[in-house]
Length: 135
Image (cartoon, rainbow, N blue to C red; front, side):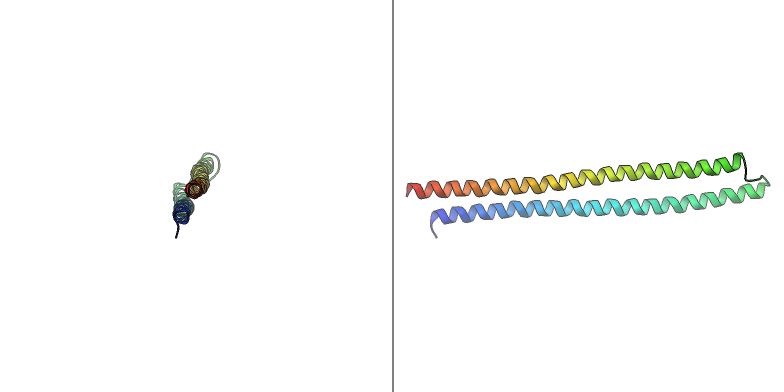
């Protein structure tokens, strides 16, 4: 194998390594996205279950007290439900922002690794061409 061929092979190997690093980082970002989405779904499920338990407890307490479930008691139950849903929505928005950030980072890593690989290939081709021109 000539020196020029060795330079090209080395450049190709470096480029392949850059692409593999980018793919690994993109795969990690994808896994993190899925984990965030699973955590969000679990958090929402737990929140809804807790809200149902609290609502049942409050309805039972209101019924035991002899107060009718109209007016203030009903307004409190509705307000509590609305507050719980609002908290879930804010948490969902925060999770979605984190997911979008990870997607952007994933895409940037892919682009960066491709550009790096291209630079490595061009550099190797330039060195091989320079070597061939001298010989």
